[in-house]
Amino acid sequence: MKYLHFFTTKHLKKLHFFIFQHLKFLHFNVKKDVLAAFDDIAELDVFFLRIQAATKVTLYEKDSVIIFDEIQRFPIARQAIKYLVADGRYFYIETGSLLSIKKNVKDIVIPSEEYKIQMYPMDYEEFLAACGNSNYETVKKLYELKKPVGNQLNQKLLRDMRLYMCVGGMPQAVEAYLSGKNFEEIDFVKRAIIELYKDDFMKIDDSGRISAMYEAIPAMLAQNKKRYILSNVLDKRTTTKDEELFSNLLNSKTVLACYNTTDPRITLSQSKDFDSYKLYLSDTGLFTTMLFNDKSEIYSDIYVKLMGDKLDANLGYLYKNLIAQEIVSSGHDLYYHTWQKTNSTHYYEIDFLLSQKTKLVPIEVKSSSIQHHASITEFAKKYSDRTGEQFLLSQKDVGNEGPLQLKPIYMIPYIVK
Image 1 (cartoon, helix red, strand yellow):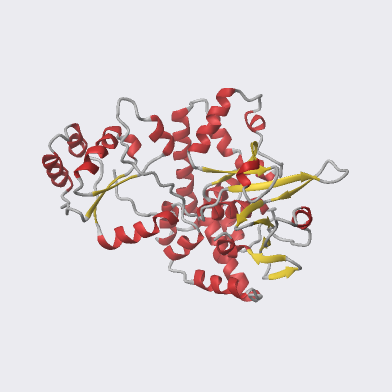
Image 2: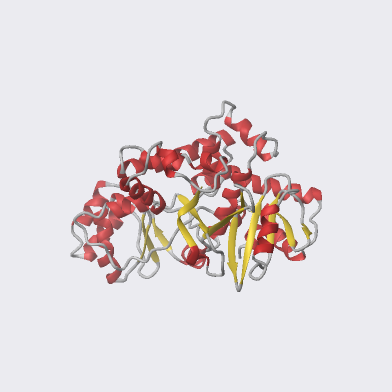
């Protein structure tokens, strides 16, 4: 159990402000005498006295928050929540790995008092706020003006976005950046997080298949296939057990599933193809680390090149991961759409589809050139009766080609609001 440094979901913003402005935290590390207090909670007066004595922290009724971090490691403490909430003296927050939380429930009663809130890595807005960067409001005003930004400012704002792509939104990585760590040290932090994820996966299945599914995501996106093919990852025909393990990967929330919608309408979920999907990582900073995992260059050199947009690689799927993360953090589900070209074996593809009011909003993402965008053009023709705004996101300045709006990629937060 330890202090929770960050709350990073939009659904917690009001709670975040309230807690950090008005409440006092109980901050303690795991100690034997702390854990022993949970062996008997029949006398809560005694229980709270033992906790305060062990941690040397004073609790204030209706004014203190007790945080149970890594709650999956202490099922007995999770079960105690039922009685602690009923007591009503203090506030409680539980955090932990979803996979292990669901598994470590043997011989305990799951408290019905739990209210589950999905937590996400910091989105771009939250990252800038943590860095003390006020450019977020600048970008908002520029988006509303719908006029060119100008090359110099556009390049500066793109560098801010690429910095976020390098660091990501995981609290440990952001903390490392803010404390002055270099890119190699930040990358080390992110690799440690990935290893923790894989350790969790191994607890569910020691064959390593879930880890293989997870690690294959950048490669599968780089192949530019219509969907994530599980049998290709496992190099064998998939079984019911494989599908169950894949479900565990989705439930871990370490990945984001983007489903193909076969007949795009306002209710995108109604034509959702559960067998056709793409996977992205829940954090783009981790995606960047995994993307260059097999590179021989010094990691710091890779990051410097990425910051300067000088990597000799097609990074379209890295930018797509960023867009996917922003869409989900704004409360939307992920959808894309493919359809076959006339008299051809090739397909058109819309990277992302949103439903806003009574119209569909197609989004295409480019890492560099924006000259070719046949898919979004054909989509607007094919579904003209249901297409609203349409966006091509890239590193280019604001512009338009007829109804197609050209936007710099850092404006994505305002498109998905």
